[in-house]
Amino acid sequence: MGLFDFLKFGKKPAEDAIEFPEDTEPKERLSVRIENISGLGDVERVGSYLKQGNIVLVKVRDLQKKDVGLFQTSLQKMKRLSTQFNWDMVALQEGYVIMTPSFVRIERPEA
Image 1: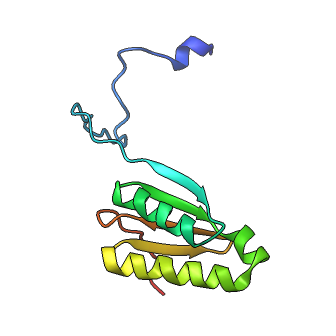
Image 2: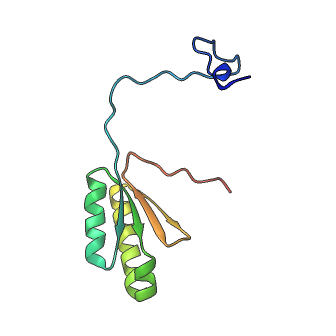
């Protein structure tokens, strides 16, 4: 049995195969930005990206190691902005925070 035996063109798909309809309309692109914060001014920059409709992956590990007080203040400011603008926010163990605009929700596993 050769390689071309596997590549039979015009062959019907298997009975258990699922075909999904192809979207022909171009959708609006959604951007994911990766940002590093080092102070309170960077929180405002992240907020402006979210207002533009971007998903932002924020690296907070460096700030946490450098200044814990500034890290906590920055995180509280990000939480207040999230509540105010109905954004979704989740912290990861690896030192990152994911923030999404109001039209994107983060699925969380049920306990």
